[in-house]
Amino acid sequence: MRAYRFDSFEDLGALRLREEADPAPQRGEVLVRVRAVSLNFRDIAILRGRYPRKAVPGLIPVSDAAGEIVAVGEGVTAFRSGDRVIGAFHPRWFGGEMPSTIQTDSYGAESDGWLCELKAVSQEAVVRLPDGLSYEEGCTLPCAGLTAWTALSGPTPIRAGHAVLVLGSGGVSIFALQLARAVGAVVIATTSSSAKAEQLKALGAAHVVNYSDDPQWGRSVRALTGGRGVDRVVEVGGPGTIAQSLRAVAVGGEIASIGFLSADNPGIDFFALKASGASFRNITVGDRAALLEFNRAVAASGLRPVIDRVFDFEAARDAFGHLESGAHMGKVVIRVGG
Image (cartoon, rainbow, N blue to C red; front, side, top):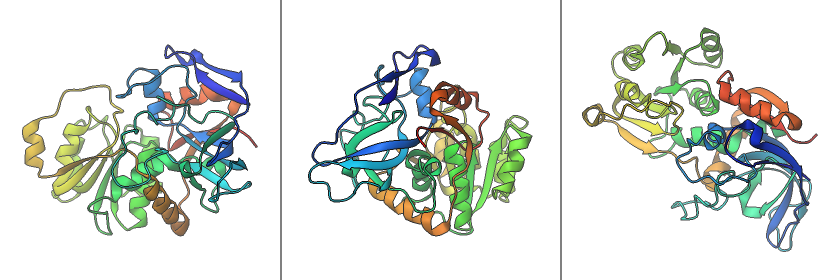
C-alpha cells in the first residue's frame, strides 16, 4: 500500500509518500480500504509544534477517515466486507470516563493515523457511515462533526430559542452552525471576510460580526442578543479569543472550550471569568457512544457536511497548505481511493 509519513516536523516537505507492506487484520480487527480523509487544525498544529500534547515524528498523520471494510479478522461479528465505515477519533474511548490511554491512542500524534490506503483497526474503532453520505462527507464527522455535537449537547443541550456563538468558518464552527439551526437555535457567527459572512448567512447565521473591523466583537454579540448574551460559545480560538467570548456569553451560559487557533496568549482575566457567571467546559471531541448518537442525528436531519475542497491523494501536501492558509470554508478533504 501507499502511505504518507512526516519524517520530521520541519515543514510540509517532510510529508513523504512511500510504499509499505499491506496490513493484515488480526483477531478482532477489520481491514479498511481508506477512501477519504479530512484534515483538522491539529494536523497543522502537530507539524508546527503547537500541539499541546506529545507528538512523535515518523508517523502516518490524520485522525479522520472513511472507507470500506475489505477483510475481517477472526472473531469479528460487528462488520463484514463491503461495509462502509468511519473511524472513531478516540479508538478506545467507548463511553463514560475518558480512558488513561487517550494520549497514546492519538492518531497522527502518538500512533499511526489514516493518510494511507489500507488500515487495520479494532472492530470497536469504527462505526457505520450514515446512509446517503459519500466517503468525502463521512470522513468529516469523527472530529469536527462530533466535537460540534458534544459542544452543543452535554449537561444543558442547546434547544430552540437558545443563542449560539460560533467563531470563524472552520469545520467545527460550520458543523455547530448547522446543528444549532437544526434544533431552532439562533446563531451568531464571526469572521474577518465579507465573502465568508455571506456564506455564513446562507447557512443560517442570523448575524455575522467581523472581528477584524470590530476588535470588541464580544460586546457587539451581546448587543445583538438584547444585552442578554449567548447561551453557548463554541470557542475554537482559545487564548486570543477567550476574553471576547467572556463578554459575549450570558450569565448562566456556557463556553465550550475546543481549540487553540489563535497564536496570541494575553492570559485570562480571572475576574472577568468570575463575573461572567458562565460555566467553562473543556471538549475533547467525544466518545464512541456519542459518535453513534451524532450519526443518527445526521441521518435523521439530512445534514450535509460543508466541504471546501477535495484534493487527490498525490496532492496531500497541497491540502495541508490550503488548510494552513485559512482560506477554507468548512472541511478540507483528501480523496485516497476511487
